[in-house]
Image (cartoon, rainbow, N blue to C red; front, side, top):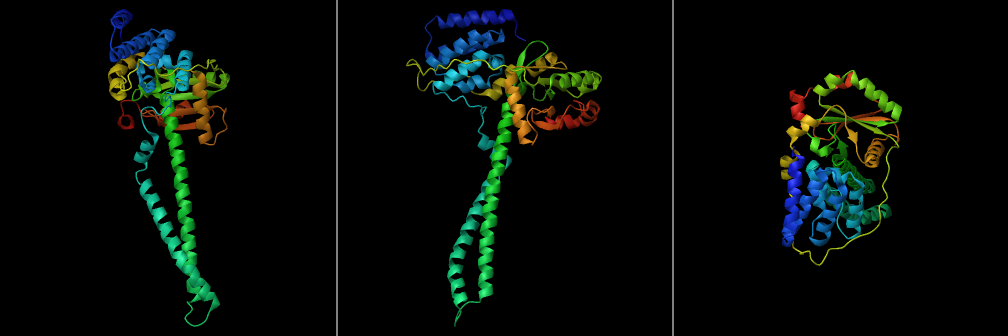
Length: 369
């Protein structure tokens, strides 16, 4: 891990760079990296001020701040919420799409949805056209007379067309509903990946940084329920650690929402319109900066949630999606890849979880990554 001395030296260098009349790209980079140093030292206010200047004067994109693991501790602070609101009022895109288009992810997971919809529409149109020709024949069949078509045959054809249209339209709307549910689940997964934790070493990380390293088990409920579950887990500590379990207790009602002053800012005239934003290749940065081997040494048996109100909001959304009354005691087990493995009401049976989860060195764990 970077030493405090190196961070202080870096701050001095960035200050010096800013004093040398840098061009916009250099100033943006110096301010951004200075903010990362302040965030590393837990100086959220100073980090936010550097980013505020970079956003306002040097066209830094807010998505960069959302994506950088070096700023995880800042994103868990009230100063970040204030900065986010200022950016929103200033016209910045502060959405939590996390670098990826939800529609694109949905299409990858359901690659034939577009083809199905095309056939639904095409066959519905064909049935509709056929029905248009069948209706006059039906009238002629009802009137009877020479040359009139057979009434039962015509009624059957009309019934087939009408039934086909009804079925195809129903399938189209059913597919749309499934897509909305899928997008909501993808959005919840991405939101979950950004929830912050404080490790036993006091380091703040986001769940996305722990992927492939631990299986978080979220325990959400009343204080006495969660405390009891944590005590019972201690008896299985060794076996749970072998399976990469990281306990994440969330006690209902202990969150406090910071007051945010409503003030926005626009883009300064100094900002170049075509100025690139640094740090946009997040996946590459995450591999080099996160240093998962160092994180493993910091992870213990239990982590503390940061921004409790955000955790509560995500858990309540998850409860609603699974038909559980929001606010009930629940546990949620995550996979190594960060997705929800399963959940249940009440607190978990630790002996069952030990039987269910394979050890970290097992083949099944490697396939789960």
